[in-house]
Image (cartoon, rainbow, N blue to C red; front, side):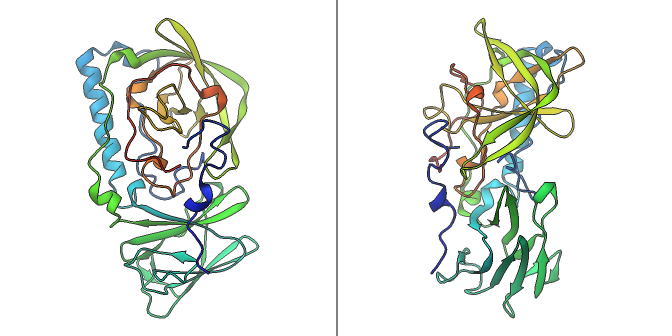
Length: 328
C-alpha cells in the first residue's frame, strides 16, 4: 500500500496547542535552506537606528531581494515536494502510485528503495534508474543523515534531489524538485510598507548560563535550542519581550507570533534575524525583515512554532504577509 506523504499526518498536530493554525529548529534540513538565514542588515549598538528613512528602505529592499534569490534557488524551499517517514524497513520510491514514497512524475515508475535498520539508512537503486551522488552513478550506498548538523548524502534523479533527515527519534526522506510548479509560478511575496517605526532598539539581558529553550514544531515534537537571554523593546511606548535563539556567527534568530497571525500573516508565526547584542546588550530588531516560514510555501517543511512566551499581543504590521494558502 502506498505511503501517504507526511502532510497527511501533520494536519494540526502540535499546532492547536500554540495557535490554532500552523506554522524544527532544524528548518534548513542540512541542504539548500534557500531563505532561512535572512541576514539582519544592521549591526548592534544602534547603527541601524542611525539610518535615515531612505537608507533604511534601501537596506530592507536589498535584504528582500536576497531573500527572494535564496527562495528561487534550485534547491530552495520552493522546490520541496515531499517528506516521507522512514521507520525501520524497506521503503520503495518512484513515480508509480504503488511505491511507499511517491515521487514526481518525472521519476521512473520504480527507482529504488530506502532501507532503514536500527537508524542506519541505505539506498538500493533499481538497474538503470539513473540515480547519482556527486555526479557519480549510484547502485547501493549508505546514506548519511543531517543528524547533529552533518551534511546529508544528496541523491539526484534528473530535476529531483532527495536525502534523509533526522528529527529527534524519527527519520524522514526529504524530496525536492527544481521543476516544482510552486517554483516556476512564484512571483514574490506581498509585504507591509517599509517604515522605520518597526526598526526598534532592543536590549538583551543575557542568561548565565544560556537557557535551553523547548521549541515545538509542526511534526508534533519538540526540539531544544540555546537561548542566550531575554530581549526587551518598546512598541508604541509599551514594553515587550522575546526570547531569541543562538545561531552561528553574529546573529540571533527569533521565531515569533503576533496579533496579525491567521489574518494578514501566516497563522504559525514568522521569523526574523537580528544582530547579536554588543557588550552592553544593545541591538536592534527590524520587523520589516520578518519573513514567512517554509511551511507557507509547502506542506512538506518541518517548521518551528513560536513558544507561548514569544507570541506578542500586538499587531506587527511589518515584513512579509501571508503567501498563498496555509499548509499547516
